[in-house]
Image (cartoon, rainbow, N blue to C red):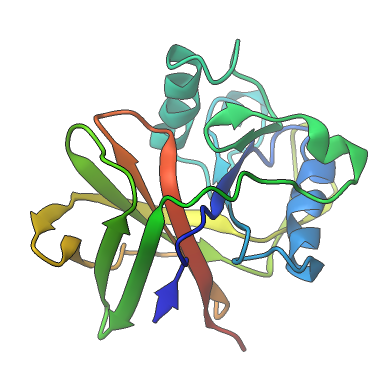
Length: 224
């Protein structure tokens, strides 16, 4: 069972690409969060590989068009002025302080407990929100690849071996049902094709058709 607690666990999103020569430092920064005490307690990291760099000579095997669309939607919602990589978002808003090397500071307001249990390839989700929330609540479930490496053979990162963690291998979204015991949902885990023995899980909740997360939770599923 993974549980966020009542205080907000921020969602950190990195929009990145193996075809972008500016992205490896951001990828390393995200990897280094594994050594920080705030991991899973104060924030949940997810790396979304975008596909709009694929044309330049290297097709990123982790890239999905829907991840590019997610970044564009943040621009439409006012979370950023334009689409770029590497783009780091903290709670749905572009955040450049990752470059300073300082610890991530998050808003630890009480927003409600988000919990998820995994059994037999299914996830059971419950959210007991502390604040009234207008509109439909949606849960997003992502399987994250850890300790991944790619030998890039062309494009801007040609002849480099890139290391990745917290990579969104697939995401499923499901409406939450408003029940007497809170908001709940049950869903199969996302299908993945990447060959990795190291997996983590990230779950976050958003409201009213907007992408900006309300609460998140995450943790490791398995390690070699």
